[in-house]
Length: 215
Image (cartoon, rainbow, N blue to C red):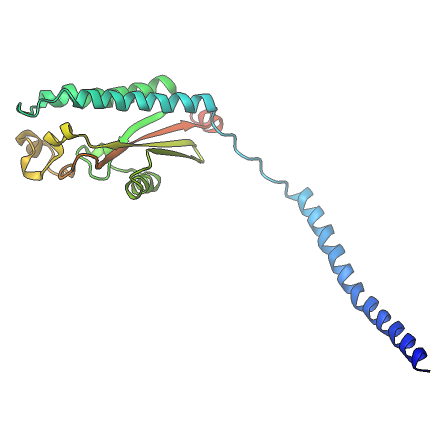
């Protein structure tokens, strides 16, 4: 008798389990069908193509050459000689001219950016540049980094202060008189050797951006 009750009880329990599982199976079927329809109606957007890797490698090497040029020119400054406007023409201007040439020759956007700028044209122009300066400031060991944005690949490379740069970028009161007179809103002073002076910013346009904004 006890065995019969046990078997009958198990049969009822199994029926209840099957009844409770039917709505769950029905719901899962609906969700799978909806997902399949959504895939057909709303196809996945294609991933934007990254810039040509060899182009990026060329940009990195070009910036290394540019920084080497800057460093070699800075070494020509005589710390015992008077700093004049001619000094800036011979030491600072060629770096900016070379950056412009790289932009024109390659279709890139190359410029120098600094939070503590002397030339207002070198101030950060957008949130990306401000964040890049902040990242390089927070991580002194970080030489450079890159990231893909909507308009292409952005490459940022730090510029450190060299001892010879302190003739113009050292203590505020020690700046040459012509700099004090010409740059009334100057922020590029009170640096020490090894400090972050600024960065090179390079944008290599994506194929889509280049086609949208032809030269």
